[in-house]
Length: 330
Ligand code: AMP
Ligand code: MG
Image (cartoon, rainbow, N blue to C red; front, side, top):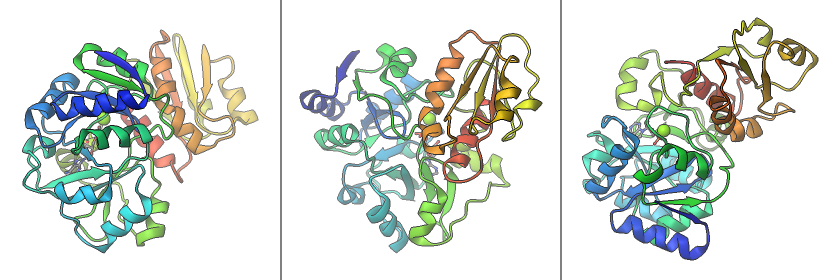
């Protein structure tokens, strides 16, 4: 494995590596991705091997331009086009009917494919240099916390990848919002780095209800699996503002989501070996950006328990709470 900085020559080498069937971990604005040529089934198979990811889990295909979507998917209508033109590049993944050229291993046999145009300049340069579309899940062992630093990738996957490009910390810090564009109104399959409110401002109401039939949806959209993004340390979730309800035992750490108030400080101080605030001012963008890094840090801090407080339920709050909920499931 080679660890490269984000100098242009290195991005070219990383793109060429993908074009030759290699595996490259690179930063996006959401989390670090593990990329391979989306049209090369053997290369994509190496992703599953490196992550030990079950083959029923479909991957997101990353493109560098809207024009490149046509080779991957059939754009199903004006709403999909409006979202691409308004909210791409960015943390929004659109599920659309697939093109035949996309191998089954990418979509796990579904007749749809998930596509995203990331905003991170390093990701876009690597995709451009590869000359292809890049299938890339998060660059972590399956089920474990997502990586938001190159060091997380090196620790989790190490020699299983050919190149890791270090582009610093990811600015959004949670995975993309996944939206099913094959139904009308479009439906949220996974809450993520782009708030529902922002999407609705472009195309009107979308279906963001939590799926009642979660189990059957999980089979078609495994980002909805209950245990995912999980630390090894047991994690317990409490409601917003309710850290006082936590019953820590042993050496416990607190992960506090809401703004530092007298109450939450009082409730946490003394009862935990360590308290970390996701954002001292309660800023949800800052909280999302630091979420996985905080969980990685607490998970390697030798704690018996992590107690996490839910974020408030607007903007990026649902995406943060979704990750915390999954981190609490074993
Ligand atoms: P990750 O690559 O780890 O960010 O996860 C990608 C997630 O996108 C998957 O776990 C699915 O939930 C979702 N996804 C990808 N492709 C499809 C698809 N064709 N249909 C529905 N959901 C998808
Ligand atoms: Mg993942």
